[in-house]
Image 1 (cartoon, one colour):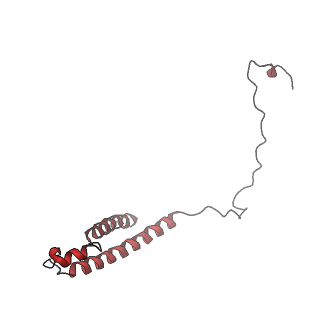
Image 2 (cartoon, rainbow, N blue to C red):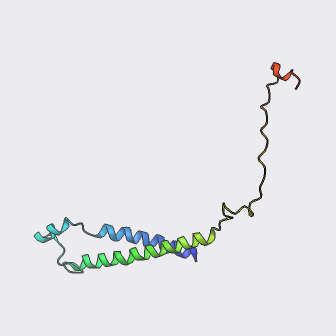
Image 3 (cartoon, rainbow, N blue to C red):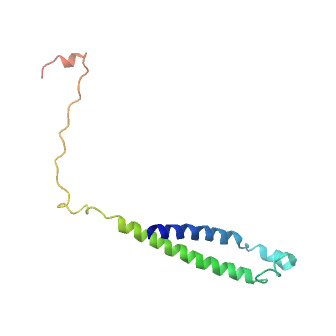
Amino acid sequence: METLVWVVHILVAVAVIALVLLQHGKGADMGAAFGSGSSGSLFGSTGSANFLSRSTAVVATLFFLTSLGLAFFALKQHKPAASVLDRTAVPATAPAAPQAPAAPAGSRAADIPQ
């Protein structure tokens, strides 16, 4: 199930990128007023903007939902071991005693008895 959500999530992410890149910016409206617009296009003069805007909203909602689904799967797999405040779950061990550094083999400190 998680693999299916990953595949859908990646496809939806690519669709969001494509739909955002297909949309015209705010500066394209003035150019369309002087005849360089797409009034004879498949969706009409303003139909493409509405269609692309609505499609982007739907795909963005799907992206949000698949993100929540993946977060749910990640939370379900990750089980915290124990609380930091819960001392009964973690055995208390004493820290190891510090050790003195070893003297080099040819030094005079190795000849001194302790």
